[in-house]
Image 1 (spheres, one colour):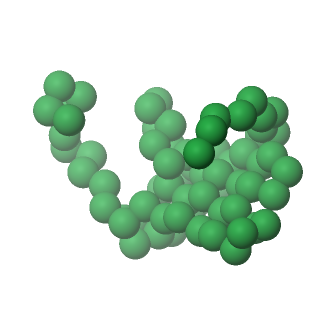
Image 2 (tube, one colour):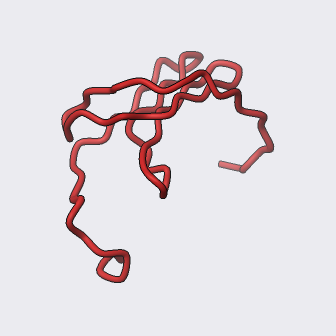
Length: 71
């Protein structure tokens, strides 16, 4: 894979429910992709990539971990 520059458009805030729980997210779109991110670190909660019929969802989230404790 190769990183490519993209322009994302902020759609709005919405609640998203995934296996890891329910999160208040910011939703962004570009072309055929939509992402939902949450929190100050913009943790990825959900990612839809329609042109290749792909979806990623957050399955586990440990909100008690300190930044220094993460790998």
